[in-house]
Length: 413
Ligand SMILES: *Cc1c(COP(=O)(O)O)cnc(C)c1O
Picture (cartoon, rainbow, N blue to C red):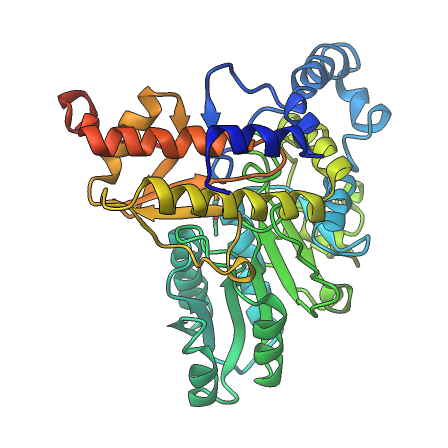
């Protein structure tokens, strides 16, 4: 059937995940397709934050560290995220920014393979990942080799016996391409290297099985598909088999085996707790904990299934409504090779997005010519997708984006 608003309506009526939209406080009149950058506010979070701030902090004061279990929140929330990425309990902890976790974990990963002098990372990886890989390499006297999924095997051959870590993103932040976590992990292992993954655009979006796939280490952000809120803390996964040997460079007191001994020297906790650093961002951590509930209830598999169906619908709409208007879908069309957002090239992407935002359709722009549109099945409807594509058609066919108002290049999105 030709994609239309009527078809969108009937698909919405039959959608088992449709009720989950009410679990998010999305403003009226907004089509929110930027949940891969900042997940929307879960409706339960303001009430939880009110309790955390007024009662837990305000009334319980310092006692809340024990009474309200603030102390164990990094591992408690870590285990809940662990379940979303296929990690058995005791291997995931939350705290610090993604960038800090990347650096801390990557250095520790390289130290697990002493004598190997190469860090491999992905050439299109998110800039902070590449900057931090370069810095970790400089600190450790290693060399960074950047590859693509296509050139990885050849690079591992060329550097046989030298590669300490293969550090890849599971889903490309820009194009939305989905990499083969199991296959690349296996390639890394055959080369004697460890596989470390950045799951920022994968956790909560696509089924990830870190334990089953033999992943060694992983990190990821929580304010995208996990809706933890701006700057919510990132997580680290360390497979149980590596924990006792994990030599992390940031040896803060919360990672000590007995933090309240206030001992002179650092002795790491024997387990995942050694990835803790200092006092965590408790408010953000507890907002994140409350935010996970709708996703857990829906299940990542169901969300992924619907996200793929939204994707098919999007491609159908794009093919029938956007042809000849300067748009080009840059994300693989194969559902097995894409995550949950689409990258659509347009030579005037910034102006087009500004015009779309003026029409209530919110996405963002990367690499100056790529519109990113995130179709998260947890709260995006088929009608949203049709509305967005219709707005793209209207803007590009009328040249509405050429209006002076939309010519400002956005600084922050
Ligand atoms: C979003 C994202 C980050 C963000 O890092 P922050 O320290 O939270 O700013 C890092 N890496 C990847 C791959 C991302 O997608």
